[in-house]
Image (cartoon, rainbow, N blue to C red; front, side, top):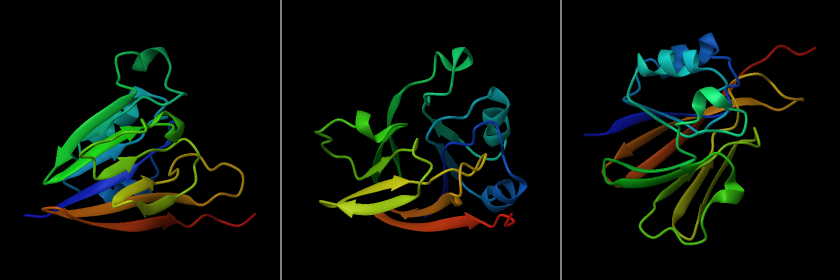
Length: 154
């Protein structure tokens, strides 16, 4: 049975209504860090089970949160870290690497492994897009849809 997964990162204390509307039916939520306040996690946990790592802006309140996380959804094995520079060189058995930090969407399969940064769907930085991803997993098959939240031009 397939699963629908919301992949978020860098919300920086802001859960936009457009994001909440879109992730409402998801089976799982993945958050790549820089949450900035526990209320964000409380709200996400009401929607679906949550996998989360600590970002560089997640301070004292997040001290018990892991900086890296390895987990499995369906037959797909994940490794998650906030900053890509902390991904280990050797990741045996990992199918998908999730990271954040740069606020820039990145999706590329390298040597058979999907690397995904959903970008930032929180506070907008500079003129960057406001993005996240919806992932569908069916067994070992992974599909990713980039979601862009329109923002008013200045």
